[in-house]
Image (cartoon, rainbow, N blue to C red):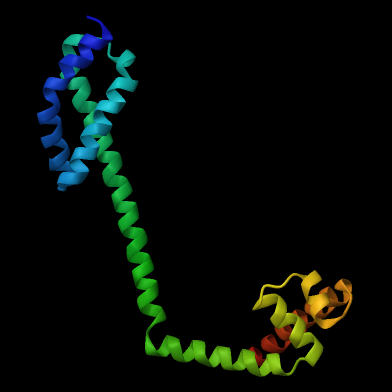
Length: 167
């Protein structure tokens, strides 16, 4: 029996394969896609079929593996979305929002303690996404000066915030 004859004979099981995939996935659209995936894999792996008389068993083994892989991916996707949902709910808890608001307020207080020059460069870099070259042009300073001011501002801000956290 040639490979094309074997593949043609496997098509007669398409209804059974569809029901098999539906049983695993519990979703008609997923079952259709899985059935297509089964036949695609069968075409790609036809040379691994040793005994054409056992082609039905071989095809259903492929179907089982395709379905199990699908379920594994779905489970991972579900766990990922559950994790995101849990994190989102935690983020919007009133206590969490209050803590975040307090942190932001503390950050702004420390930011306002920086010199005018440091604050300008840092805000231009971090919040306005300007390059050091653009910052230098805007404030009429050298690019190296913009880099130095940004570095010193970050370092000072981090130090001040760490000190406040110790208190």
